[in-house]
Image (tube, rainbow, N blue to C red; front, side, top):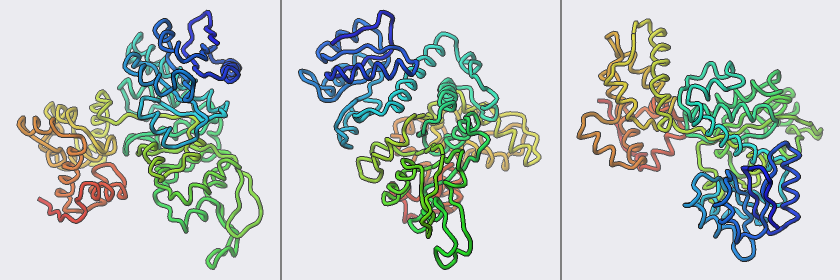
Length: 466
């Protein structure tokens, strides 16, 4: 079977099951999406890709003649701008991770969930449309094309990568899809979650942000499901949990991968069934909550290692937003730095006009492992030390990881991990080994800095302020 629409289409579906091809076609068309091209013979895939322009390919894993992995391996180098989504009846974590490491952007398990399929295809079409629009109209126009620019008024941004994130936020906000936001610590994941809530139909209802790293096994059920009076010794009255408190609104689960695997099944059940029991109660309580989750980790690795449930990820990952780290958004660095300069100069009653050119240059060269949060804390600390009218390099020198051309050349030859290790070590030296204070300067959670210390074998090292 080979069905190619007369008009150009961004989507190609390759699967030897002709019934599934027609079902996918009907699902996408009924959702108002472009009619996809359909192909049942995988041997024809590369020729078709060379003759027509596609942005997204849904590719079956197990096919006669040429399997999905083989097609992916052959096509990756030749078609770098195409997004690949592997579709398979094999619900196996290792297979999914292998597909993604081979170049697949996502992995769908048969039978396909129509809502997730539509959301996924829609997100990739929008991504390519935004990029084309950016190329055609330029950076300033892509920001001006936002439908609700007022929702982003408090966010300082000029980089095109941030503009693409804003457009994704607008697109998903109007739906009721569950969302996973990926990004390093300090990139603004909670800020984006709040914008999604403000632009959604749930905006009049509560928004609750919960850091999953802070819950032990004993606290989880009480905090999320609440308890009935008398459920345990200190339960003197009925108490609502987060699900009830956020009913009708949005529940933001930050650092979702930090949740203990034994508790993930309980969370999954409530999300799927939309009902739960308070501790000490037999009364079923219904709940209507939109889930937005965030993580600073590679979920594929977490699933493969057994630390995160694949079924929970598939359930919450209807729509995915990736926030690039600050080092990949160079055009945002100086506007953010100047914004924080104004905020902290005012707070400390200092008349600071601008950044000195030398400091601006060094900020642009720096990798910012702690991202926006680290930049903010760096500027805040430097403002306290500055005595002139411009924020100088000298005032921020102790917080920057290197100085001078020789040291710059050596840093450029380091791996990112080595750069991060040295910077963490330097900040700990400046703070005299005060880990909570170092975490604030780096813009990461205290629990994260302990993991970093273990990772880089710094956990037992003594640090003295200099």
